[in-house]
Length: 129
Image (tube, rainbow, N blue to C red; front, side, top):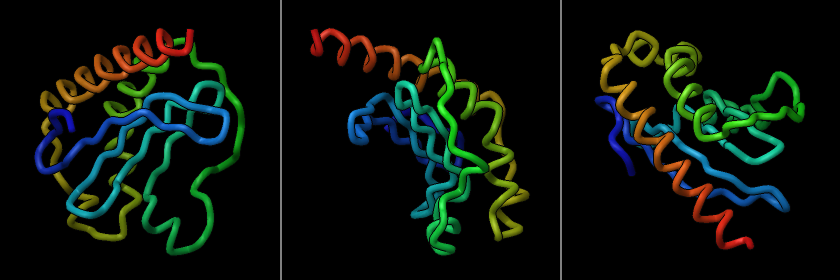
């Protein structure tokens, strides 16, 4: 866990999905995963409203596409910083949709996630050689 804006918890981890891997972050509000950012190399993507998508038994992507991201740690931080409000807007609960977010706490959390992701990429890259 890294610092998260109140009232969230933020978990960072290294994710392996088949042949692809990379840093990832999940933003939680209690037991609800509000947003998951998978920085898989060659397949980076974001999950919004994951619980509701699973309940509907379908993926929550507009489309699956492979995109190139030069700086995955920075991309993860930007997704968190810029798209948390969007992720909350998808929630069924009005209380969650209207939740106030302290921007300075969010910026600090995004910065910490970016640093962790850079260290993780360096560590895993070094161990792969």
